[in-house]
Length: 228
Image (cartoon, rainbow, N blue to C red; front, top):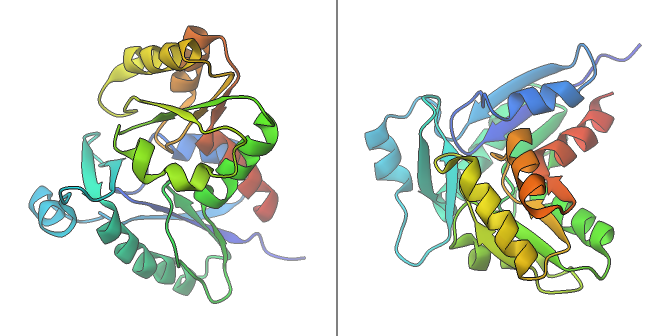
C-alpha cells in the first residue's frame, strides 16, 4: 500500500494560516500529512520592512501575519523568496506543494514534487464556468486590478474589478464591492485572494445575488484529488 503523500503549503505571509488552513483541511481526506511554511516566518516587522517593502509603481501583494495583522509586500521580492521555500518543502519530502496565493509567479519549479499554483488554475476554471458571461473580480488591493490583469486574458470579456481587503475592512467592504460589480454588469463573481473565506463569499453572494467562486475553496478541492 502506498503512503499518503506529504502536502506542503507556502503562504506569502506567516504560517500556519488560521484563515485558510481550515478550508484546506475540510477538503482533504483523513490522514493526509501537511507541512506549512511562510515567506515571512520568523521575521520581525523591521525585517519585513527591510526585505519586502513596497516600491513605488511596482506590483504589490497583501498577506496576513500570525498576529492577525496584514502587510503589503513587494511582489518581486516575494517571488524571489518563494523559490527557496519551494526547495525547502521538496527537501522535506513533500510530494505536493501548494502556493497559498493567487498572485501570478513565473518560473517556480520543482525537481519531482507536484507544484500547484492557483494563478494557473483559477482563471481558466472561471473562464470555463463563465463562458461568455461577464465576470466580476474582487481583489484585495485596487492596484492589483492592473498588475494581475494578465492572468485573466482567457476570459471572453475583460473582467470588471473592485477592491476589498479580506484582512482589514470587514464584510461591509466585500458587500459594497460585490454590489458595485453587479451594478456594473457582472454576472458571476470571483474572490481573487486566498485570504477570502466562506464568510466573505456569503457576504458577496448576499449583496449581489450572483454565483460567487471562492479561490481557496476551489483549489482545496482540486488538491484533495491529488493526495487522495
